[in-house]
Image 1 (cartoon, rainbow, N blue to C red):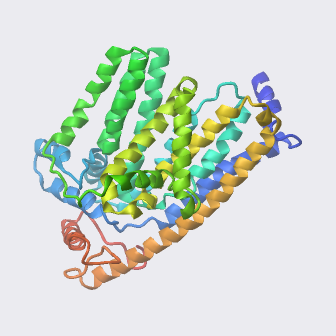
Image 2 (image 1 turned 90 degrees about the vertical axis):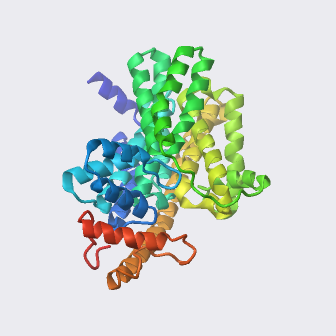
Image 3 (image 1 turned 180 degrees about the horizontal axis):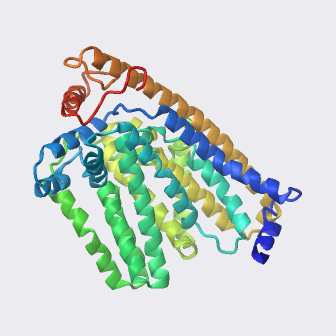
Length: 453
């Protein structure tokens, strides 16, 4: 009882003159409001119609899986099936489980399942950033803008998208878990914690290839702390996902490389993609690089190793995307599909700035104003991002409706995949039509009722 009284007395003292209950209620609104608004929109627009990569990654895999008679052949198929450059084993295990339980694939269920990964990711954001020297209430107030930034639908292209939600979001989540537990294993020398960190890293790799970026991050962190045996065990953990990727891997044809001089601009644009205006993308990318280098120079890893390693993973991921996607054109650097990584880096910059200047006299004098200003600005940006996300989701639903109606009218001629520039899709529309016909004929997919895309 004494602890609870002490907590209430401390509650939100950075905003004086406000009753504690009112302050707590306001904080809950700032948390539940962005989350509720985001999920309300996502559930409203969740569709049972596949989107783009869903046809090959989901229908293609499920049709092949259902045709195989033995467990051994299914396991070989699981580790050999390839979508573009990726082995999406985590997603495929979910698909196999759904087929085993229901003998049917629900795209809407997969969408909702993928969107739900946002909640544990938010929890990991809370755990990754330090709370040293902060009261519980001050830590909570500092975190409120993070909730608003993260749950603004700035990255709406990743959401309500079955394949995207089961590739990108699990890879992010399990990479965060691996980093958090790896740092925990360094601090408490627990073999169990280190083992779970290795397992999380394996699942991250089996979700998306970006999980392999954990190898250099973990090795560097362990060697600096002279944990040489653990660094070797860390590398050994990646043998399984490495084998899966190498097993019957077929290089995917890509367009020719662009000039190397264009890649730094692509990289900066990718980093700053979460900026509120197009003209601010490159300056925002420069700002993020500057803050990261400043964090390196002041040894921020000594204050918050998990947060620093997470930011390093994000920077390496941006470099990986630049190598793989710059050849497809500059517009790939500011697509909302990758904007979630930029949002994470803005959150890192915000947390680093607060940690860096927390002891400065000017910060102590203006702490209340800074916190309230950050919260107000983040809520405004959240609403703006939601408006952009709403426009995108509505436009995507209209395209799905057009494609579905065309397919219903002539399933042997028209594809359910709507593209603005047909004929430049490399055969994706025809593949989508064939796979949909086969999935419907096999009974593993049912077209949604008219008026319910």
